[in-house]
Length: 114
Image (cartoon, rainbow, N blue to C red):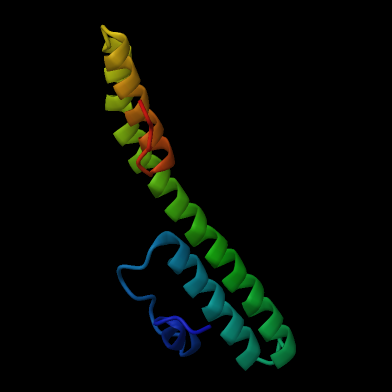
């Protein structure tokens, strides 16, 4: 897999502005990897293996970041629903608030009969 900044890392250019933290780590790792290869400290095959490890870790970090962002959005959407549930005065208000809580947690509308 090739990243937009990989050629810059390969040519030992300065790190581009605006990269995420995970992208910065990948950029630095790739720059070091290519430097080691150019200096003869790393075979092509070893370089491929190490690049695969760097990319795999980068993709894991990207997934974790997206997951945390999604959780943060859901949590901030959940708080008003929970407050509404706590403030419910009638059974019907509690049911509606509980439905909103469940829909927010699972991210899909609940289809309830009754």
